[in-house]
Length: 310
Length: 301
Image (cartoon, rainbow over all chains, first blue to last red; front, side, top):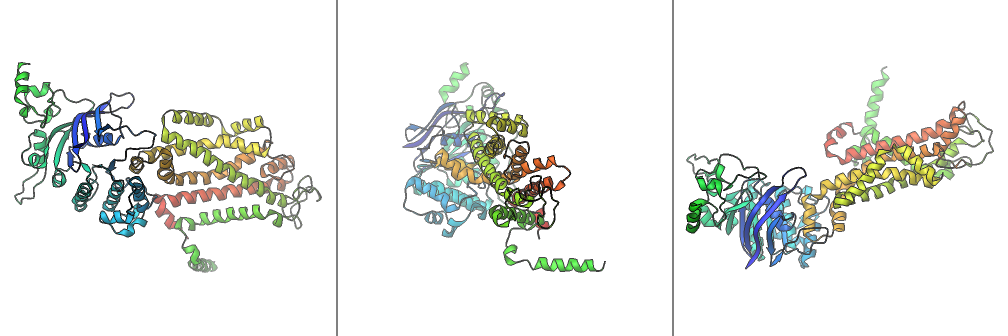
């Protein structure tokens, strides 16, 4: 059963005097209960905007976000009744209130779910000592803060947990620990997890499915094993080549040339074609809007014939 | 000359023997400036509380020789109606200091609330409140306060109201800026996602994180508020003649310029209070700002 389904989502950032920037331009994604979906892409491709839109922190310009069969409403001035979606944010230094003790902040989450467990129990579950309930955030390290943030989000018993690059600000030793912790806790409680990261190698460890995002669109989606072993889209292939391999042979990671184009002025046709080594004529003209790999190299046969006539 | 190093040595010995209770104070509060500010402010609060016990005469009784020079019997001299100036200055603390405190507290409450609402809710609430604040800022402070006081009629209560009308705006502006910065922080969003109502979010997540700088501003503003209040009384728009109010006393001293003591002592009272609160405000600012920590450490006693 799909827990969250996103269809043709468009999110625009508007600033006065400038054309709107389409941070998310027609993205589609589903997350099932108990499933871990990893969303990867370069910085600036719209991953975080998508995550915030799912929480209702951004207004949606088009498309739909459906959670448990009901549309997600933007977070306004009213009290949020929809506490089934919780989020762990990127920056561990601003995700906790510096003036309140860790235990009190976790208790806010417990008040939502009405659970009988104590904040100390939850701290234990995320691998922190029970005595940390009395600590203020400045007495904790980045990884510990992120664990407290996870404990607070989980205390509300969400059906969907979103991690918006929760590990990117942590040091390497804490990254995979926190990522696996999030996965285990989410799956144990039966919740879905949408894990956003720019680090494919960490996402591979924890995700059931991987979605690759480029300039506001999902360009490839599939099971972790198939995306990792046989990437279809040239962008996914480039991302995978950019991962360093400690094989002792001195293989250097291949760099993807160029930068992500300005989302306010996306290239015509396929959004990846200016950087794509396999770009064909059709790529410059027509946008590939099919799945699981949105690339003309992997177009369904009927579509290629059709476009050949055009 | 040879005594000087000895004196320095003795001084440093006494400094080393600071009582343990003082040692435990944060460094920012152990600087000379902070100690002086705290001592003077505390002394004035004590004077305000114990004026009837300390004052040698009734502040309103006109029974002494007129315009007597300062000397034994009446240390600050007497004014043109034969009232003891020391007693009047001491009693004046009962008028000026509580009113200043009340005024600043009300400005913080009103300005802070309006600024917080403007910053947190944005849109039309922001526009309306901040344009009103701009309106207040566009006038010279004392002139606007004079207009309000004159319109309401001359009395101390109206003077407080008049200063309130001009004083809230700076708190609104500062409060709005601080709330704007905190509003988008991720812990505030997390709280909202956990189902906090807007007011709970403001109280629990926003308020504790903006209150420090606002308090610093309030302490620094204490001097300005006292000056404004005394200024209004000086101009005849505040305290009415018989009551012992420092600004009004300076004004009456202007009439007898040859007797310097009539205006000087209430003026000094205003000066010391303003100075003490400015020192306290600076200290509070340094204590709350971790970036000044090192500079503070070097000057700490």
